[in-house]
Length: 576
Ligand code: 9MR
Ligand code: 9MR
Image 1 (cartoon, rainbow, N blue to C red):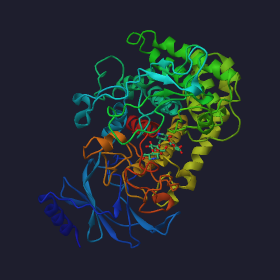
Image 2: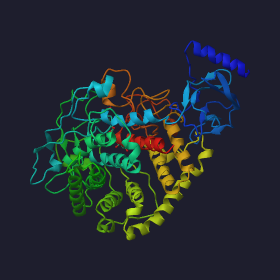
Image 3: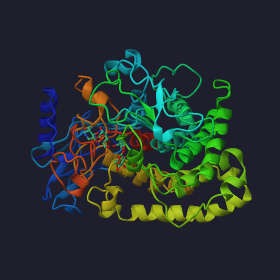
Image 4: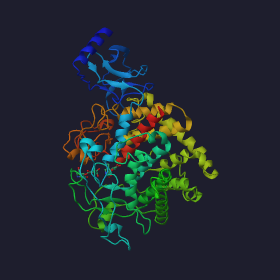
């Protein structure tokens, strides 16, 4: 078949305006930057020809053959790749493979991820608790107010002399954690840290982003306005009497799959804990720096945040080992609390993060010296239970403003970070999907897509340290992974790609009666743990994903997964 045949076929296809994308071709339908590596994966073991057609030219711009077969680490699946990186000209393209298969049109252009980046940040607006979402901002997903949280009960586990059992406190606002309607300090911690770091790393870019939220007209960047919705809630979770921080604001059990305004179950704050106090302290110390830049618009906030951070830190110094253990709480107190636990037991990383942020904001070395900052050589990727690197990233960000004692430690820190980054990218050319993500079975945890996003953030930090662009191109491999080039073929962001999640475990998306889920949400992704016991089309490690509302273990959404996606996409847009 020649070039002419394909052009004619293409015209034909265009004229009826139908593109039947073949499920055997997988790619990032959000598109590609002009200079980026551009790869599609084809589910075949045959060395078939491929043709890239420009829609503007109505002509073939590249002819090639699929690369040698690649085997999966996790199953018997064999694939081949079409590499069309040599095509750099902005425009719309379609890829044809063999005789019958083609993709939908996709774009090569600058700022190609802008719309998905903005949607992934706007998704936080859709997670707002205690407020109605107006049509003006929420479009077809507008909704009534739910969970006012003005009368939250002090649970027996959280009682103190000044706030005995049954005392009511007010803790409105904040973001719903995930597909459920509860609000958890620990998970808010890493989420806020990631978003505030995005601002500190790319302030000009973040300043330029417009989200169309109620605060869009004020003088504060929209991303920070959105984060403020959660910050103010977090502040209300601190007991002013002793500085301790309640672990969560929650129903006793999960709400049903209903809209926020339907459920009227009582809300509780439960036991104070060390993880909550330290994550809170870190966020507030960082927020004091960040919002301090907008003192005129937000008078006093800077000081309130710092005071709150210092008080939470002191509480944690006095209570360094208070674990949140839901089972033992439930043996002692009523009502039973059965919502998310976020039950971390190792606080060494939370101490490192809080100490870093407090040191940076106050310039007092006593914080830094109070903690074993480098307990080992490891560079554990951030997750809700592991926040050590958030502290390290912040120290590196302010390298030029550090006191000599701290500056001295950075040389070794940088060496470890770049060494780990090197390890992370070394094997990528040999992987099946040509991505950083998925090289190890351990990548596929509950919320594996956030592992992918956090790997890329790690590489972006390595790029910032070295200015070596290979780290950026490798960070992009996980953008491709998340948006479609993976073993499931799904784009994992609602509203983007083919196929895309249509049935996330997300109460508003399920209950609103609207066909499309709220856009910009990152689902958890492949998780061979399959703790939800739903039916999965495949149980292989890298394919254990099902687009079903049943599947909270692979298809829920969560703020701590969306935040690194936001960081990654905005960073790419800023750095491309
Ligand atoms: O909807 C809940 C989801 O947000 C949690 O991540 C998940 C795990 O804690 O639990 C979900 O709730 C389910 C509960 O655990 C068991 N009964 C069915 C609930 C809703 O599907
Ligand atoms: O992301 C959390 C995951 O690491 C845990 O294994 C899992 C079970 O405890 O809980 C996940 O977090 C859920 C939280 O408990 C409740 N809200 C929804 C969160 C995402 O599924």
